[in-house]
Amino acid sequence: MTRLAGLDPADLATAARRIMARCDELARVSAADGAITRVYLSPEHARVNALAAEWMREAGMTTRQDAAGNQLGLLPAADPDVPSLMLGSHLDTVIDAGRYDGIVGVLMAIEAVRLLRRRDDAGQWRSTLRFGIEVAAFSDEEGTRFGKALLGSSAVAGTWDNAWWDLEDAGGVSLRDAFREFGLDPSRIGEAARRPGELVGYLEAHIEQGPELDRRGESLAVVSSIASARRFQILVEGESRHAGGTPYDMRRDALLGASESALAVERLCRAEHHIIGTVGQLEAFPGAVNVVPGEARFSLDLRGEFDGARDAVWSGISREIDAIMGRRGLRWQAHEVHSAPAVFCDPLLQDVVREGIVAGTGAKDPVTLFSPAGHDGMALGTVAPVGMLFLRNPDGISHHPAESVSAGDVALGLRALVEAIAHISAEPA
Ligand code: GLV
Ligand code: MN
Ligand code: MN
Image (spheres, rainbow, N blue to C red):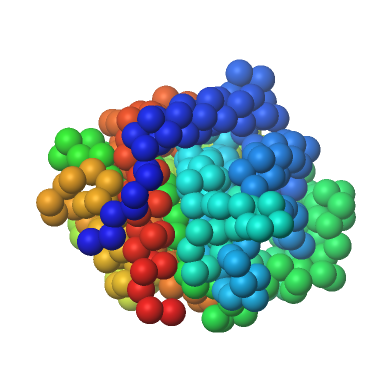
């Protein structure tokens, strides 16, 4: 087992305090008063990129914003031409978010750089390892604004799909126009892409976003794989009519069709292992108190450990929705806005994360967890081996203002992350 000399607990505690304070500082950059909402290509996105860039430079990195609005920092190796290890996570949020999802991983990466740097003879900061370290603050993991998630990391993975340019936000602004308003040039998106072999790997620390570590009384876990995901926007069409004058046998109530479908999603997904379906958006039109809803729209977020099982459940849900709509005299159609296959963490990176946890915490047999939550590593998996470290998330509450992580677990996580990185560096190139 590699153990790093010179990882002083006091330095780790100071770094963890700085991370917690910076999470608080970033939480103040929000489009909403009294809540945290920070979406892709917004003024808030620009402000957190500027803050992250300042902190990256302070840690000794050179910085740039890439063609997809990701903020990047680089601590070069002694030989600047060798591939780098990428660390990172995301700075965008869901609506009314917590302050740690993604953010803590970016800030831990910056602190890891601080612990793994040295000055060269010319006084420049260099990595102490056989590779450089690049920190990525990804710009869109959540997909809050355009429905499609992982836009920032997909650009880096070189899997950008030009069909996405026409995606629109709730205000009808296309992704193409949002790029231009942010000061980015859509025609240069390819410049963000990395080639296979260009990165040693991608390593991400993230809060668990579930209760397993908290239930087991453990601080850290190795991630084995990240769930496959599909997202749909579903339109239901019926007929708007008078709420008082329309007898039940004449109603074609789109909201009731959508509601019954949401219940079917729960029933069908609960019956399966590691399949989770969520209807998080539901709207009725025309939205009047005295009108039977003639149209309804709802979202479906469907995840599974394996792509095949997820797709089989989607087929079952589609058949059930067909039956519901048929009984109620409604029409429906689904528009798929996001699809990402399951990603299995690289066995070697799982091992080094495990070694990092052992070295960092003294745990004998670290917990290994599957991640039902999505992460930037899902996109990076096409271009680099991916590893992930989970931090305990008290009560498993996330995507909520009460989301938390303790400074003690952040210090342990940082130690494990740095030990894991040193372990990769000790492997033959
Ligand atoms: C992101 O956090 C997701 O899992 O949707
Ligand atoms: Mn996240
Ligand atoms: Mn999230």
